[in-house]
Amino acid sequence: MITPMRVFVLIFNARTENEGIHTIQVGDRHKILMFESEDDAIRYALLLEAQDFASPTVEAVDAEEIKEFCESANYDWEIVPENGELAIPPEINVPETDWQPNAQKQNNFDEDSQRRNQQEEEQPEFSDSEIDRIRRKLEGLL
Image: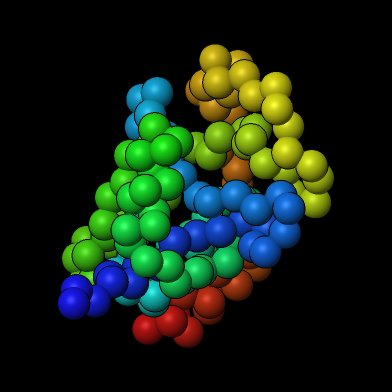
């Protein structure tokens, strides 16, 4: 019997009707990152939070479940190996998601508008105190 491979993914609004999984956009494709290491997934989540993105929950799941989801949603997936190169979120986040924090899912998702807004959005600037807070969180993970 083959033991299922457990991986870690980032979930927004975990265990709610408005739950969403973190994806990165590569061209016109969405990709789900599956982390072999929970620590790497937590670090990635902290980097997202540092970019003013909603704070995700790290969830352990069976890799086959994520692969099946990706096939059904026409998404790509990538396994981020433990002790590999640290995954870094894209510098520009999608300004609109197909899930909304504390709101119902929007069905009128306009990807062309999303891409235009993403290209126009500027990177947020952080105060020294915010950078220090993020640095302390990351150092706490080491």
